[in-house]
Image 1: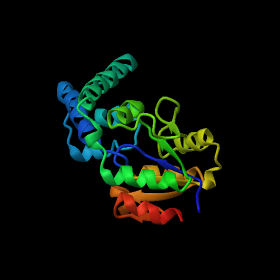
Image 2: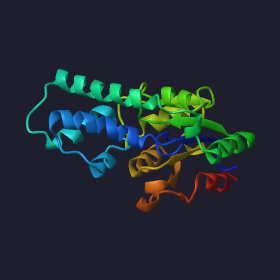
Image 3: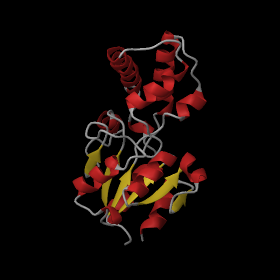
Length: 212
């Protein structure tokens, strides 16, 4: 096979929490009197929580201290985590689970590379709490995508060379991060239109054709 391990982004790849992110950021923006819509929310995909807050605050008529920013980020996350409690194994599609099982049957190591600090909580909610071999997420990185840190950490945790890993991403910043890490990338969803990936997936199961 071409690869020894597959590293997946979480949001928009394994499952979708975009709507919950949107609702949580919208609640914060509304409280602060900031205009916020879906197009602004799309700019936050794959971006760390504090960097996302800076984007939201671009339209803020005022300034927040460092402490106030931290409090605002926590407020958003508290709202987001409350919304995530609505998630269940029903939010994991049969196609995704069957494809993951098929990849594992081929002997591939499976990892997560996500900027989210809620990665483990989300995986537990959808029934994949102990499924992946290793997880690299927002709790162990200091730089968000397109910096390659999260994927380099994932490869390190899997004990694989970056060249032996394939990244699956739905954001252009994630594809850029994969390449910066020295990894090939498979694009799905919005990342396909970026034209940067080695593979473009029409559906999650198309990934099986990329690894043989």
